[in-house]
Length: 279
Image (tube, rainbow, N blue to C red):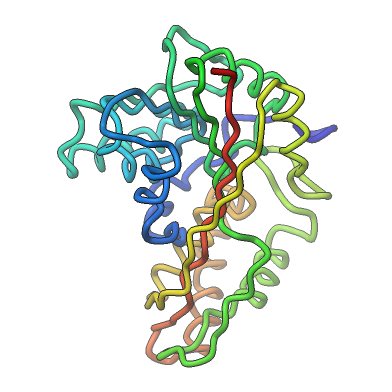
């Protein structure tokens, strides 16, 4: 947890409806890669901490008997339940409203726990130690994110790349120069250094794996707008009465970049760090 900042329930308020459409997907082959890395065979239980709308857990559902997603935002869990029903896996999916700090919450033990771009919002020392105790002997904790260090080339794309720097500047014009986060701000951004936290909690590792991306994604202006509204620092409620004005300006900016309202970019690679418990 960042010093001087406290979590509050508005952190992702209103973002759930935009999340699945607006966020870029993980690299294809992620589920197959994890099945090979962890010898997953459709049995066992998965705990996804900070699950959001179930993006990762649902992609991995076929690899487990049961998936359990935990998230404090009710809108996210509603989206997860809806998607689970559409995929026909509601019978093996459980969605629990709560913060990671509320664990173990009587949920039992798991063979695998995942943090997909969520760990930085938590009391990391507490949560890492708690999740370690929830894993079965030889269990695995996965820290998963887009590969932040790669440069995704725009060469050969069939449409313009969305004007992300200009979009970020527009957000700052409306919300101010300091990153917003719920009712507070994060002047220095979210914390890193996860390796030290997991090691201190008693995990061994990590093993690092990268699932390659690079595939071309076509995106509409609606997708880009949803992407903006899916972020904690530009959540819809932060704009207050100026939300409509902001969206009008954002769509004007996008139309100037691509008169057809169509964009393209390359899918990011996915980086996985695997931490193990003692067998």
